[in-house]
Image (tube, rainbow, N blue to C red; front, top):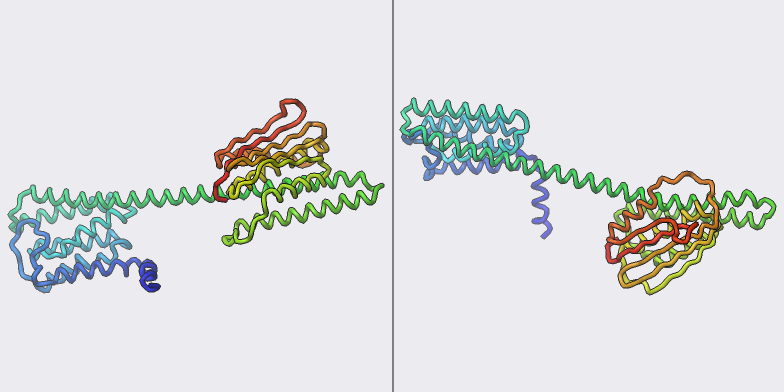
Amino acid sequence: MVIPRRVPELWRRLNVTVRDLPLGLLCFAAALVPAWHTHGTQLGGLPDRAYDELAIAAVALQCLPLSVRRRWPFICLMLASVGFAVDQLRGYHSLGGTAMAIALLSSGAHVERHRHPAAVSFSVGYVALAVGLVQAGGTEGIGSFVTYYLAMALVWGMGSWLRSTRIAETERRLRVAEETRAAERTRIARELHDVVTHHVTAMIVQAEAARYLTAAPDRLDRTLTAVTDTGRRAITDLRHLLDLLNPDHGTEPRTPAVGRLLTLVEQTRRAGQPVSFTEKGKPAASTGSADLVAYRVVQEALTNALKYDHGGNTSVEVRHGGSEIAVEVSTDGSGSPVRSPGGSGRGLDGLRERVAVLGGDFDAGPSPTGGGFVVRARIPGGNAS
């Protein structure tokens, strides 16, 4: 069972000329079968002639160039055309004439440059052949020559259609690949923003507080320890993010969402932000990407609370209902902003896009009671992470 599965793969690895050679050899062999002599294309109405050395050469000139029909399609067409002309002018009428249509189809499908000169050259050559057949005593009228030319034009058109279809498919794949790369870059940028911004903000807040604790060594030591712990967690989260890019990611058990949120809340408290955490309802057995998005919503909201309302009362409420998660994070505006690098503005916009992808709702704005800020999200579950 292993060998048959590998045969198509090994065949595709062969040079395209090697893969096309059997078709040319098959046409050549079929045209030499005695019972099939004079059973090929008959153009011009000349009487049949028995095979001789020139007939074999004409058949070879028509069939064997099919081995390069995709590598050098125009050369294949020219050689097959010469062999076809000899075949018809001498009255051999061999089955090798079938290769003419294959060569024309391949040219329409694979000639990339100078397509119009190629078509004109073929047309001029065909007119010359028609004139030669008439002068050689051909009995068919102009209608037969026109009909055959239209049939050949249809074959060229079929090749052109195959070419345009192939180009369109290639462009579609390139577009899909580019869109996939862009989406992946955006996803990674969001993850980096969420991870780095939160931890660095917490470290800035803790470092700022440490400046005023030189007279209290115990509190200073605790603050510096918190900065160190935050840095370690940042490294851990960054490693986890890099693991997401690993094809083998996902084999390890994931930390429960509630446990991660409690760790996040505790870290924010260590940075000097009073945070209350409330969870309602029972988490569903499987919520897919909703857990991660809910975590990111809380993470971004707490980061903004540290930045713009440091020391203010902050509330985190997570509600589990059926197959969705509702998150609400609010501040009361009683704190003060801290000095930190300016935001990029992508945090809340990124969250809005994340939630929208899962079909949820996201809202962020000033608290209706005034002074504070509220972030709300409803995140449907059941999506693959």
